[in-house]
Image (cartoon, rainbow, N blue to C red):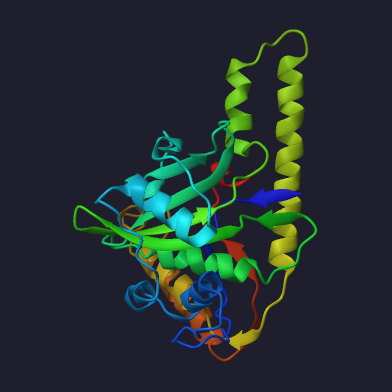
Length: 276
C-alpha cells in the first residue's frame, strides 16, 4: 500500500454537508476540515480555527496545541524544525518523545502568503477521509490550529508520522550505493517496486468516480489560461501556433459546457517526497 503524504488535491467540486457555523457538538478538528471544503479562500475558515499562540514562539505554540488538543505534553526541546522544510519556506516541525521516537509531524502555513495552501490542505484531508482504497492511504490529521508569530499568522496542522521511506529517499540512495555486492541491484529493485505501486495507486485514484457535472472545473480553466499565455509558448519556441492552440482549447471548453462529464480525482502535488 502506497501512502500519499501530501493532501493537496485538485478535485471535482463535491457538496459538503457542514454549515458555516461549527456545531458545538461536533469535533473541532472534523468541523474545521469539513468547513475547509466549503469555505475558500481562507479568512472565514481561519476565524473558526483555535489560536494557540504562546510567547510569540512557534515551538511553544505547537507545544500548547499538542497539550490542549491531544492532551500530550512534550518538552519544547523535543519540537525541532526539519532541515527540509516546506515549499514557500514554511518550516516543518518534528515532534519526538523522550526516547527520541517521532510522534507527530507539524506543518506550518504562513497565512499572509498569497497561495491559500492551508485551506487546500485541510480540504484535501477532509476529502481523503471519504475515499476508500486498496492500493493507497493518506496522512491522518490529528489536530489543527493557528498562531501569530512576529505579527505573521500561521496555520498549524498536526499529522501522524508516515511509516516507511519516501520515493525521493529511495532514488537518492542510488548514487550512494555500491555497484558491487548486490547493493545497487537491491536499491533499484526497491525503486521499481515503489514506482509500480505508485502507478497502481494513481490508476485506482483516477478510476474513482464522483458526481457528473457539465463544464470544465474552474481550477483547470485557470491553469489552462495561465499556460496558454506563457511567454515560451507565445514565442513559438516549440513550433506551436499559440493562437490556434487557444482557439482549440476554448472550443473544447465550450463543448464541455453542454456535456455531462464524469469527474474523478487527481493528486495536486506529485513530487517524490510526498509518497511513502
